[in-house]
Length: 93
Picture 1: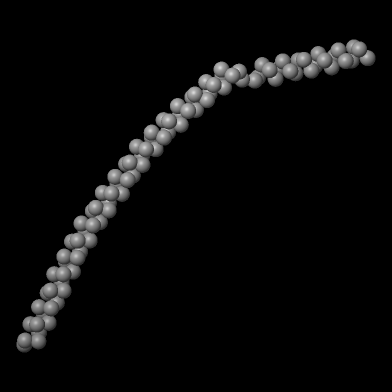
Picture 2: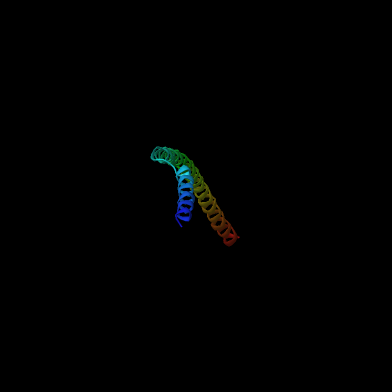
């Protein structure tokens, strides 16, 4: 009976040692945490740059759209003026 308990204790000790050897130390965990923080900061910086670029592109597109809208409005005014002039000319004949 004592021998069986001793064997079980040996097995238990071996398994605990295996588990212990696979566990990370506090220093290793701190290192991983620091690396993750640095990676997060890097990604945030990259996202900021991408966000600014997207916003600039949107702003340029919107400004160009405003210019085109003004040109279309001017053309419409010219067409309306010409239509009116044609009506005046037709009624004068």
